[in-house]
Amino acid sequence: MPELPEVENVRLGLMGSVVGRTITRVSLKRRDIVHGQARPASLLTGRTLTRIDRLGKQLALIGGDEGGTPVGCICVHLGMTGSLRYTSPSTLKAREGGNNPAKDPHIHIRWHLSDGGTLIFRDPRRFGGLWTFDSIDELHKRRWSYLGEDALTITPAVLHSKLDRTRRCLKTALLDQHVLAGLGNIYVDELLFTSRISPLRQACELDRPEIQRLVRQMRALLSRAIQSGGSTLRDYVDADGQSGRFQNQHAVYGRGGQLCTRCDRVLSRVVLAGRSTVYCENCQA
DNA sequence: CCTTAATCCTGGAAGC
DNA sequence: TGCTTCCAGGATTAAG
Image 1: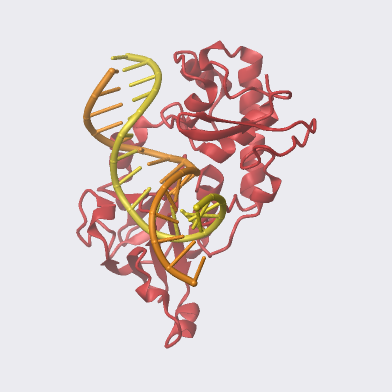
Image 2: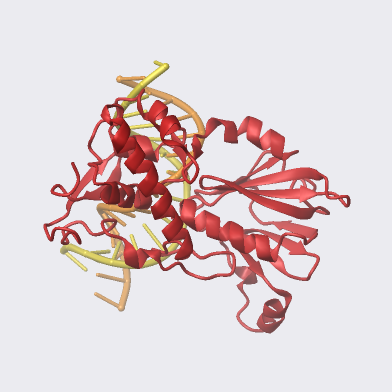
C-alpha cells in the first residue's frame, strides 16, 4: 500500500519521464474514479505537465499552457493498490501484436503523451482516485488544507501541538492524515519500533523528548525507505514498473509471532483502529 | 467537538 | 481440485 516513501518514488519517476511532455489525448475508462469535472480539459488534455507535487500520500499532476503558466491540476491518490506508470514509445512498440496490457480491466485512465508514450492509472481495488481542480491553489484550498503537515518536514513543535489534543492511542493518531500526512500502517509500526515507544500509549501523554525522538526517527526511517525504493508487499511498483526493496528491512510489520530483531523475544500483535499492529512489549514502552 | 464503526473493493491465502 | 471464507486497508461518511 503506497505510503509516503512509495508515493515519493512515483513522483521522482514521473519527474524524469512525463514532466515536460504535453498530453495529446485522454482515454477515460471508468468515470467513477474521477471526482470533480471529468471533461478532457479537466484531465489536462492539451496541457503540458510542468510539475509533480506531493503532500503525504497524495500527488498533484500540474498542467501548464504554452507559456508554462499553471492552468490545471489533478490530485492522484493511489489508495491501496493504485499505480501510475509511464510507458515509453519503444516499449509500446515492442508490445504491438503481443500480449498487450491495453485490455487490462484495471487501467482506468490512459494519458497519451507528445513523445508517443503513455501514462496510465491502474487500481484493481479502486480505493484510489483522481480529483480535478482548475489550479494548484484550488487543490490546496479545497483538499490539501485539511491534511496535516508532511511527515518528512513536520517539526516536533507542530506534531506536539497535534498529539497534545487527542486522547486516542498514539498509533491511531499517527495514522490520521489530519494529524500528519504520509504515514500508513507499515511505517507507523516501523517508526514506533525504532523510536522505542508503544503504539498503545495515549497520544497526549508523550513528553517533549519522546516527540523529538519520534520526529528524528521518522525522518531517518522515511529517508531510508525512499532510498530503498519503498516497500512492495504485493502491488506497489514505481512509475517505471520497478518494485521496492525496503520490505526486506521491516523489523516489525507483518512479523507478529516472530522474534524481535533487537531482544529476541516474541513480537506481539494487536488490532488498533481495525489495523493489525505489531510491536515488541519489551523494547517499546 | 471528539471518537468509533461501517463502508467501499478485489485478489490472494487459508481452510475444508 | 474447487469451493467458500477471511483478510488486507485509506479515507469518507454516519452514528454514538
